[in-house]
Image (cartoon, rainbow, N blue to C red; front, side, top):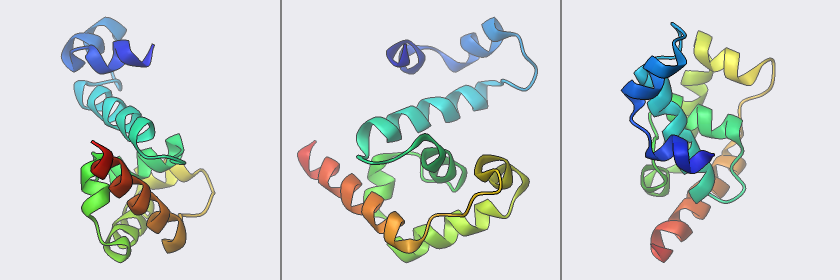
Length: 112
């Protein structure tokens, strides 16, 4: 369950999984990605991965971001090996899509 992942200690989960590439940081990334998907409407998992990879780990950070700056950060991350792995030959999101995320995150922030 997602709640179990969110409530778990990343170090403990990484040890229990026992796979070298699933580290404490990977678990933290998964937790942050799950929270983003839960709090930003219309956000897909791939997009949450791009946001976390770009350093925008919370919906509050997305809500506060300038869409142009956020798009630029995503495009920079998309050029990395990790970014390319996430995109899998797909395109990076355009500024219109990023603007939708910023607006949805801002709405969530106001509601919180």
